[in-house]
Image (cartoon, rainbow, N blue to C red; front, side):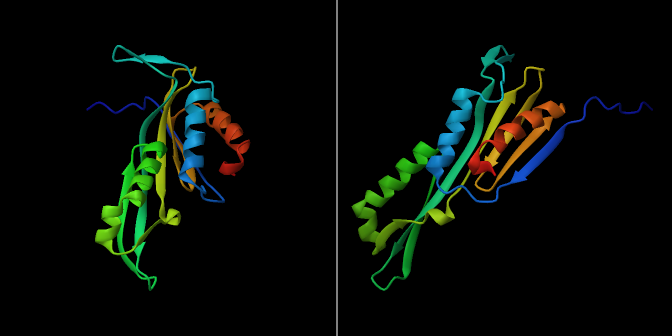
Length: 167
């Protein structure tokens, strides 16, 4: 019987942030900056007959709660808001907060409890050496996965070290 022969060695690395992201808006601003400015020098590439950007968002998740409290300060209800990006999420929160019909039904005063927000964004990147890898950001961590060349991690780590929010 034939043996399996290793074809590649993919790596995964992570960094836990010393401070969680303070707001989804600031998180979204950095994600858009990475996509727009391409700080890692990624290159566009062809896949399945389509030209793809060197850095592109391939998934994202933004969630938080609007809580309703009565005059005694007791929570009487909540609504979870989810969106595909920070803009949609923020618009969703603002819409729920402004919905007087929902506020009346809930029987309390609405507020956005941002301490409970959760979010992540996965970027697919194409290194000039031809490797495709992922960089995933959450509220409290950054991970790089699916890479082989140590130079990829070095590039991202050097950039991350220059970003105060990623300390």
